[in-house]
Amino acid sequence: MNLARKCQLEAESLLQAATDKFVARFNEMEDRLQGARRKLGDASLEELDAIWEEIKRETRSQCW
Image (cartoon, rainbow, N blue to C red; front, side):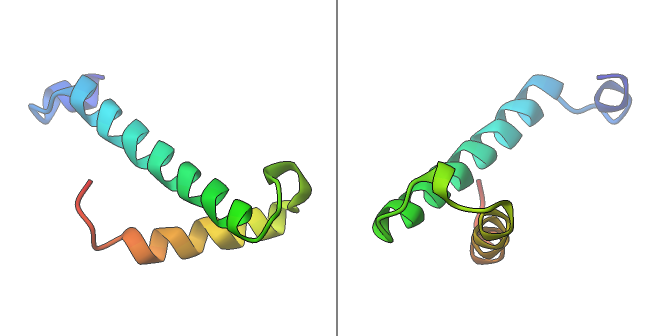
């Protein structure tokens, strides 16, 4: 909060943007698993991490 204030940034907006990005990525991860007829709880942490990183690579150039 103090850093955002010092940089003259609106902390609430930054937090909302980060939350929106996380939710969008998480929903995409669930969609991909569902497309493979799998459930979130059935995937290993390594699989989830690989999917997450793939989504990050694909969406990094997009504006949120």
